[in-house]
Length: 362
Image (tube, rainbow, N blue to C red):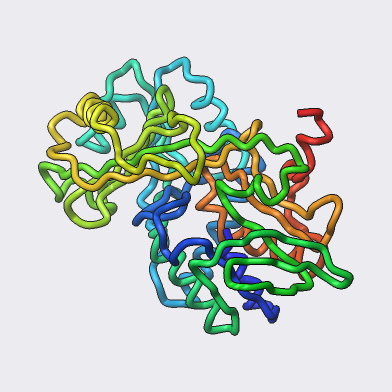
C-alpha cells in the first residue's frame, strides 16, 4: 500500500518520500513472494466493486508500463452443496454481472482434468480472476514513483510522528523529516502509530508452500486456474515458473508479535497442504520446495482501515488488510492520494473509518 501511495502521489505531482524500516523487497511483512491472488469473487458487494476498479487500474498500469502484472487464468471455486459462502458469492457475481460458469463437481473435473471432484460438490469458474506478479508489481510501483520525482529511504525506522504548527514531524533513525501530510501504511506495525484508536489488530503468522509437480504441462496458467475450496478456505495457484504450484491455508495462523516471528514453515503444515492437494488432485504434487511465512494484520471485522486520523487530518492511515488486501493496493494508493491532496475521495470507504472501533466501544 505504501508503494502504491508513493506512486500515485508522485504521479499527481506531490513532493513525496517513502520510508521503509527494512530493505526494499524484504520478506518481513505481507507483500513479498512471487504471486498474490487477484479475485472479484467476494460475497460482499463493496469488495466486488473495489476489485472491479482495481482490475481497471492494474490493466492501465500494465499498458502504461508495457509490463505484465496480472495473469487472468480464472478461479475455480468448489465446495459441498450446502456451503453458504458459495451461494452468497454466486449471488454477488450475478448481481454484479461478472462472468462465471456454474457446474457440479463431475463437470468441473471434466473441464479441469487434474481435479477429481464428485457429484457431492458444486463449483463455479470465474474468468476475471487469477494472480498478480507481486514482486514485479511492487518493484514497478517504486520505479515509477522514483521516475516521477519521489524519494525512498529504506532501512530507516520511524520513531514518532509529532504535530507541528504547520504540519507533522517524522522522527526516524536517520533524522527528522517535516511534512505537510503523512501517510502511514505500516502493516503489522500499524497499531503502534495510533494506539489511541483502539484497533485491537490481530497479527497472525500464515504459511505458503510451493510443491514440485509430476507433470508441469498440466499446471500452466493457460489451462490450469487458481483454485479454492470454500469448505476449508485452502487455495492454490497455477505454476509461474514451469515447475511448481503454490498452495496455502487461509486464516489459520497463530497470533504473533511482528518483531518476533518464527520464519520456518512447519513440517506438519507442509504435510497438511500435501494431503489437501492429494485429496482433490491425486498424484499431482511431488516434493515440497520453497516455503515462506507472511503476516496477516486482521481487524475485528476483517474490513480495512482507511482514513484520516480524527484528531489530526494531516495524518492519513491505512492498514488492517486482513489477508486479502494486495489485489486492492493499486486502488488503495489512489484513495490515499485523494485523501492527502483533496481531503476526500469519491470511493466508498465509509465502512473503513479508522475510528469505528473506538466509537463502537471495543
